Amino acid sequence: MKETLLYRIKEGVRDMCYIWTKEMRQTVTDEGVLIFFLLVPILYPLLYSWAYSNELVREVPVAVVDLSHSHQSREFIREFDATPDAKVAYYCNSLDEARALVGKQVVHGVLYFPTDFQTNVLRMEQSHVGVYCDMSLMLAYKAIFQSAQAVASNMSSKMQIALSGNYTDREDQISTKPLEFEEVPVFNPTGGYGSFLIPGVLILIIQQTMLLGIGLAAGTARESNRYHDLVPVSRHYNGIFRIVLGKSMAYFMIYAVIAAYLTIIVPRLFGFTSLLSGAPLLALMVPYILSCIFFGMMLSCLVRYRENVILLVVFTSLPFLFLSGISWPQSSIPGAWRSIATLLPSTFGMRGFIRINGMGATLSDIRLEYQALWVLTIVYFFATCLVYRFQIIAAHNHANERIRVLKEKAHAVRVRKEAGEQS
Image (cartoon, rainbow, N blue to C red):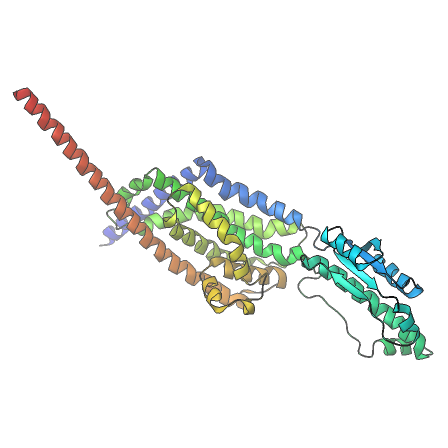
């Protein structure tokens, strides 16, 4: 009994190593798979991170319509132009002229000072400044609006101090700020767009490039009918686990290195916020990579031709990003779509990594994501085994059918030959 068990274990390990060697060889020799497994994960994050390396939008051009032509309006414009986020690019005589510049995307906003701007201030009445922003670019809108708001608050404080009749600086501080507060950005000190978005995108790149590579390899195998090669190893359908584990070993070895590069090296190259610690990162990435591997192997049954997988992955990349809840609040996503998001490894991988990377979370802090990834790993592993079992049975039946047809043809030829000899 022991000898039989040991023999089966050795046989299983040998079969897994055979599949692993075969898959690694096919990965290295297939240029398309090699591009998606190595070239794209290495170069694409560099290009994407470089595009967002500035983090913040600076010197957003703004047009000014100053109908007041007063000291107060000129002071407002001067302070507004001195802010780092916006700059005064054009002076216009009317709102229509400024609107035309916004329409041509020469500027992204307009400051409008009515004729009674200073008059109302001198009369101790409330005055108004019109701020018109191009809402097609949210970062530009934020830069213009916050700059105008900061200048307005500063000028209001100066006017309040001038009219208060205070004798000390402390009285001036209490008059302008009766409720003292301190603004402290948490988890994203710079308020940068790159530190906010790039970590999640890096995790999504792991899943999407893996889907591309595995799908491309499956399409190649199906086009060349290479699934017949797995029939002898399957031992008549009893070795499905060996095939799935052997192929997944090859993918895991490749993406263990790719994941380390994406999560550790890329954020540090571009100075993005990184509070990583080794143990939580390792605990998260192991089930994430495995779930992505089995997810890709399961979906590979849908790929009949090599080109199909490219269309499938490109189409789903943006929806997967939005469904994760990192670029749009999870609470604002409809319930049906939230249910679909729970089926994707990238959803839990991105959420967990952002908490580890940007918030310094521990494994207990991401317990939900960690457990969900292991559940997906187990579910997709058995789903992959079922898919591969069906494919191997189909390949086995197809091979038997071809052998039967060849035998019938050989028999027919032999009969005709014998008939010819007798005649």
